[in-house]
Amino acid sequence: MQQNDIFQSTITNDETAALPAAQFGGRIIVVDTEARIEEACRDLASHKVIGFDTETRPSFRAGAVNRVALLQLSVPGRCYLFRLCRIKLDKPILRILESRSIVKVGAAVAGDLAGLRQLRHFRDGGFVDLQTVAPEWGIEEKSLRKLSAIVLGKKISKAQRLSNWEAVTLTEPQKIYAATDAWACAEIYERLQKTPKTKRQQ
Image (cartoon, rainbow, N blue to C red; front, side):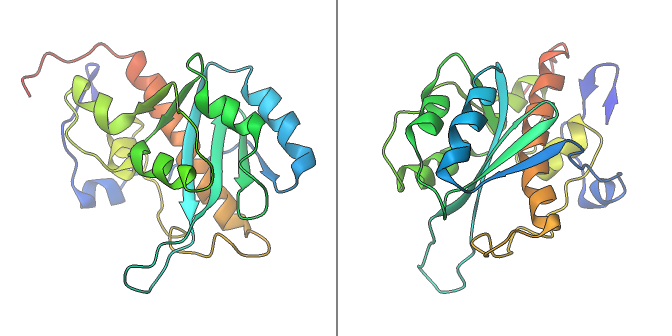
C-alpha cells in the first residue's frame, strides 16, 4: 500500500485482512539429504540477495524450546527448504550464512540466528533485519505480515506457523508457507531499495 513513493507508517489488522494473499509462485526445493546440499548452495552463492527465515516445531510445554527444524533461503524463482531436523548445518550452508558479500534478508533475524547457533557455531555476515531498516522509510510496524501489507500490498498467512515442522513429510501448505515467508523478506527489501527514503520525522 503505497502513495507517492511514501509508505504508510502503520496498518490495522482489518486493513491487512482485506488485502490479497501473498504467495511464493516459484519452485520449492526440499533439501533433506547431504547429497543435495552442495548443489543448492552453489546456486544460492551466485545471488547477491537472499530471503531468509527459519521454522521450529512449536512446543506446548512451558519452558521447552525445540531446535530449528527448517531453514528457508529464497532467490528469484526458487526457494530452498533445508530440513535441519534431517541434515546437518553443513559447511556449504555456513559459507552462505557467513558471507558478507551475500545479503540475507529476514525479519527479527537475531532469534533465527540464535536458534541456528544451537545447531552449530558460526559467525554470521551480511544479514539485514527488516525490523531495523523499515523505519528508514517511516514504517513503524515490525511483523512480517504487516511489513508485507504496507510494502507489497499483500497479506501473509500465518495458518501453518504452529504446524509440525519435524513431520516425516512436509505438506504442500507447509512448503508454500515456509517459502512465502523467505521470499517476502527479499521482495520487501528489494522494493524498499527502489523507493526514496521518507523524510518523515520518527
